[in-house]
Amino acid sequence: MAPQVRWIRGDTTVSDTAEVPALRPDSCHDAMVFPYAAYLRVYEPVTAFPEPARTLWTVYADSRRRPRRAGALGAEHAEAARRLVAVPPEVAPERESRDAYVRRVGDTVHVCPWETRLRSWLAFDRFRAEHSLALAAAFVPPVVAERAAREFERWKRAGRPLQPHILSSTWHVPLTWFVPFAADERCLVLGGPPGDREAPAAQEEGPAGRVPATAVPARTLVYVTAMPEARRRVAAALPVVRDTLGDGPGEGSLTAGRLETLGHWLAGFHPRALVELDYGGLVHLLDDAALRADESVAETGVALAAMARGEGELAVAMYQRLVDRWRPVRALESAN
Image 1 (spheres, one colour):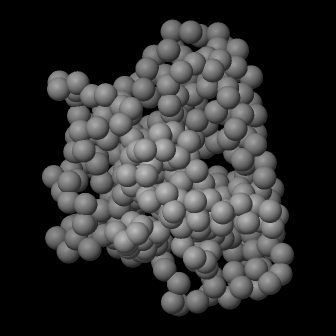
Image 2 (cartoon, helix red, strand yellow; image 1 turned 135 degrees about the horizontal axis):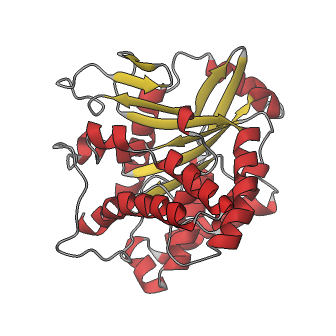
Image 3 (spheres, helix red, strand yellow; image 1 turned 90 degrees about the vertical axis):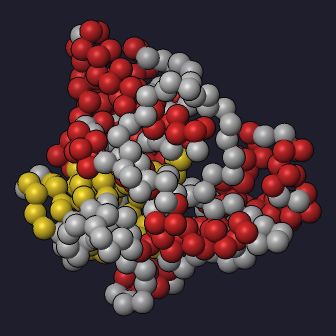
């Protein structure tokens, strides 16, 4: 199963009177937008990869034929959709993807490999663990599922890496993912969905204010930070969250256990890597005003600082704002 397409989930209940955020008029046109998923990515410098991968990624970054940022998610989604509608469905591609996201900082090239095969196996493992065998068989024939499981086992026995460079989350951004970033690391691009010829010219909002960004036609909300900063912020937040929030229930909530897991994931990469939070297809659920008003990273920072100072009322207020913002977005999963 493709990492950006959720197999099935029915554990979210939604009231008939649930408040829905300000949706864009075209938000239900699935052909025009990406899957409703957010992504946490790590870009490692090409020098961090052993040969021959180092040379291959260096050449790839300069290739004119590689998918550019504006079209990369669409290319991933199209490939995943093709495998999903196949008969029988393909749990994972036969070969690992040779594509990656690319970022440049000065003269340094950073790449984030798609790792579609690995992420598909991991997603299918989670799917089988969360649902009964009978339900899983309704989506993937047992013979196909067992073949995929055997291939994954061979991959693991060969000592291949099991930590993907990309994490994905459907219908929401886990609150833990806001911790590694700062408010001034946000980049917001407003415009129509990919392929929308009626959309106005995109505008990019960053620390320097609003500037034309017509070369980037897609709506985007991303945060990017250096790995040392991401690790420092997670490490600083962990004891605060452990002492005040513990490991309460609720998928996507801010808990010590989830924060510790995130810290371990970040620790597995090169210290000069970049960390990126991408709202992905979620930006197509919200209108421009809602995206401009989204200060989830800043609110997380304020909540954590208030917890550390013992200012319970402020911490609760900020945390409640975060929960209230994302609850109606997650409710759309069931409504959909």
